[in-house]
Length: 124
Image 1: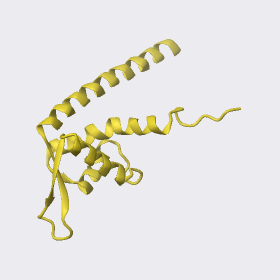
Image 2 (image 1 turned 45 degrees about the vertical axis):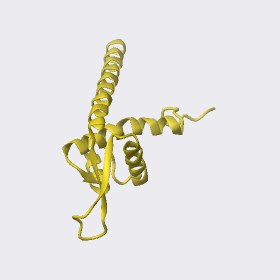
Image 3 (image 1 turned 135 degrees about the vertical axis):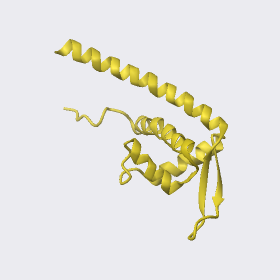
C-alpha cells in the first residue's frame, strides 16, 4: 500500500509553485516602494506567506536571481543606524515582467475557478 504525500509533487515542482508566486509578490512589493530584504520578508505575509515557515535564504536567492535578470537593482543603503542593508528597487524590465506574471496568475486563477465550478456542478 503506497502512502500519499502532499500532491504527489516532487521537490522541484513544489519549489516552482512557491517561486511561481514568490516572484510576482516580491516584484509587486517593490512596485510600491524600494525595500530591504527584511521588510520584503515581512511584506510577503500580506500575500499568505508564513514568515515563520518561509526560508529567508529562498527570498534572498530569488532577489539575487531577479537582479541578475535585470528586473530589480540593489544598492547598499546608508540610512540605517545599524549595519548597512541592501535596498532593492524595481526596474522598468521588472515592471514589464510583473505584468506578464500577473497575466499568468490570472489565467491560472481562471483555470482553477473553472475546475471548481465543474466539480461543484457535477458532484452535487
